Structure formats: C-alpha cells, structure tokens
Amino acid sequence: MRILPKLGLATAAMTVAALGATLPADAITVSQVKAAQTRLNRLGCASGPVDGRAGAMTQAATVRFQSANVLSQTGSLNSTTYARLMASTAKRCDVRPVPRRSGTGRRIVISQTQNWVWLIDARGKVVRQGGIIDNPAYLRAGTYTSGAKCGRAARVLRNTDGGRLYLNRFVRFAPCGIGFHQIPTYKSTGAQIHADWLLGTNYRASHGCIRVSASMASAIWTFAAGATRVVVMR
Image (cartoon, rainbow, N blue to C red; front, top):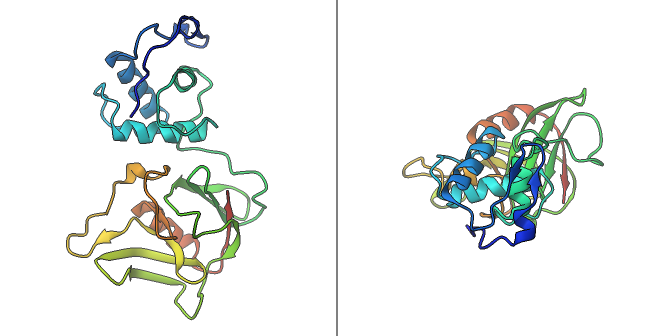
C-alpha cells in the first residue's frame, strides 16, 4: 500500500474541523496508521489488527471506505482519504444506501462500482448487504431473474468448476453459468481460495459469478429460493 510521501505545507495546515485535528507536515507515522486502522474498524471496514503497518488488509479496508464515501478507490491513505476518515461525517463501510434507479419492490441489487450487494424485501427494507467480487467483463449491467437457465438448475448446493473447486450455495440468475456463490473452496481442504476481507474490492476477479461470504451465500440461497429480480448496476 502506498504510504503518504511528504505532505506540503498547505496540506499540513488543513484542519479536520470535526475532530480539531491537523494533518502532519511529514510522512504519515506509525501512530497515524494505527489511528486510521482503529477508525476503519469502528466504521465496519474490517482493517484487521491495529499494528501500524499499512498492509494488504488495511489497503482493502481503505478501498471499502473510499467506495462508501465516493472517493477514488486507490487503497492509499492520502490526505483526502485521511481527512474524510477522521471526520465525524465519515460514512460506514458496512451499511450503504441502495443505489438510486435500482427500482422498487423485492429484489437483489448489485453495484459493480461499489462491489456491493443488497437484498431488499417487498416493503423496500434492506434485509442483508455486503461486499462482493465479480467480473464486469462477463456480467453486464441490466435486470435478470434468478432461476433455471440454459437447461441448468436454479440452485446447486455444492456446484463445481469441473476442477479443484466447489462453488457452494450456487444461485443462478443470468445465462448460462452466472450466479451467486460463496468464495470458491478447495475440494481437498475446504479452505476458501481467498479471504473474506477481499470482498468489496477489485483485488480479485471472478470468472463471471458473484462471490460472497459464506453467510451471505446462505442468505441469498434462502432469499432467492423462488424467481427473484436481480438488478445489476455499474
């Protein structure tokens, strides 16, 4: 993860009014990284241990924060991100408004820009939301319906990629092989191919499906047991 190099005098004078704090004139310090990690964790961004090292997990958390706060998703604790993070107006990573123009009624909404998914009931209430990994090169924006496609089952409890992996709780919604499923697991060990904390970022890409956590896969499995509208947005 890129650390702040040198902050100019003008930047150094910038005040985070809500906290009465001022950004430093020199490179970001270990204590500032710890402060950022603490804040990211409090905002539900899953930064991991507060150790003062801005590693991969902190970088992923920073991307989720930038996404939720409509900032450029660089993964860097630059001056703009740091100021927004420390402000009292900072938005949480794990609770986000449903995108406008996603329609109404019972549906699942995917934002490819935010790498996020919402499950919304008939009353318009969000019953579950969380990070995803997808591949926009395969899955186009548009409206789909969960169910059987191309002569293939609508739901497969333990789908397979035909090789070493299981795609658990696979729920199909787009032709022919695109659906939701848990992050793939190795058949030999049961371990996921990557960690949950990469969800909500572009640091991995699926082969076209929507990867989610095990708990989200279970929720979608139940929510989309019947034909369910799935709205995919950029």
